Length: 233
Image 1 (tube, one colour):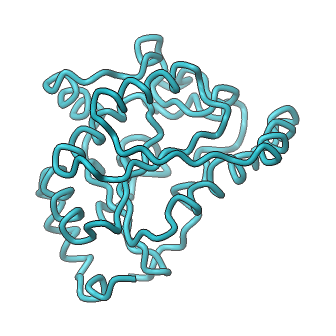
Image 2 (tube, rainbow, N blue to C red; image 1 turned 90 degrees about the vertical axis):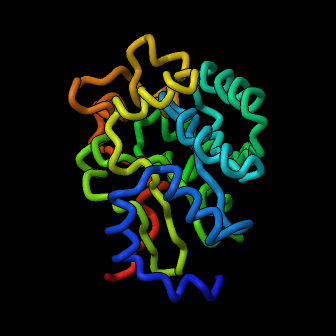
Image 3 (cartoon, rainbow, N blue to C red; image 1 turned 45 degrees about the horizontal axis):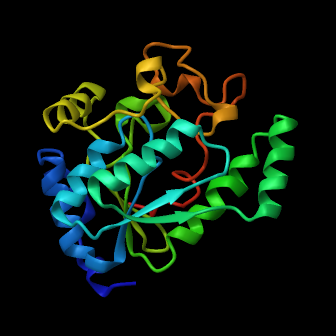
């Protein structure tokens, strides 16, 4: 881990960043962590916004993508579109064929633990060698994300950066329209949060974009944003 991280006052930094633009936050993160930071993207409904912001600053930024093997065909098409449009430095992480068979068995039996193999294990692999990662979590996405900080530090020293944490969906949409960026193809069909095809439906609650995820299950997160233990304040 880089020694300079120990000198950062994360509490004061978060206070400052609440008044900063996402671009200013990204500039700080990319300057601070340089080659040891990556951006994770699900290539979901509004993913083009953060991808565009970040790669405008650093075109060579590693883009970490978890391909579970169970995504919508429209998602794979969207990945190809954005990679070509933005010349992304895309790094793809997939489960093994053995894992995919186990994931399929769990899906068939409606076992919610399938994300452990499909996503969490791949995310751990993707983050190896990094000191920090950028993610597009926003507080208004769901109740489980309402308290997310712009900068979070975890017990192992890993730092997570949420440049658009205090943006609303309309802010993201305005940015995308202004910059002529495409939405996920399923957006116009009513999908507001898009994950694996077997577990994604249109929102059941108009006030909760993620209410169509894991429909019928007592589950709201896949685990890639919750498996790390936050460092005590």
